[in-house]
Amino acid sequence: MLGDSRLNRPGGTSGGLAMFLLGFVMAVAGGYLFLDRVQIIATSWSFFGFSSFGLSLVPLLIGVFLLFLDGHSLPGWLLTIGGLVIIFAGVLSHLGIFFRPTSLFETLLMLILLVGGLALVVKSLRGAEALEPTDSL
Image (cartoon, rainbow, N blue to C red; front, side):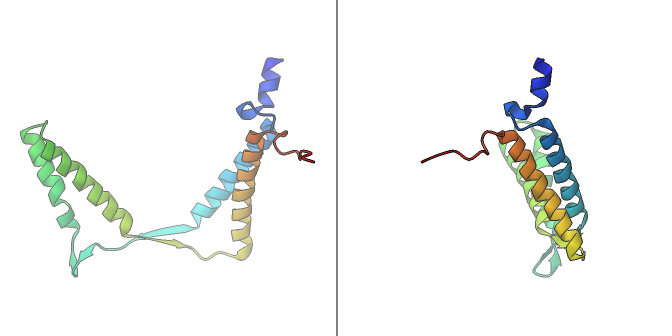
């Protein structure tokens, strides 16, 4: 009997496993459909009109050089980590993110699946008694 009660109590609440699974499937489907419509393009790195990706590699390469000389070199570690952060930030800052053209019906379907699924998951985890109105008078 203990196993049966645990299946009806996701997260230790009385929300129900069926509601949780339905919400999870809805949220995953809506999220997938929404993210499938997003298109990402890369733009070029430029600094005063010149390509600057090579310039962003300089701290990384100097840091790696110093680490090959001495693996405990603090400047080597700082330059290597700083160079990686510069490259990662540069890649992220030069991405163009666009939502591909889609119909209003498809967009509403995606968003309702996503938001409705998340609401069902939260509702199942909060428990049925947390959602019942209380007499405060």
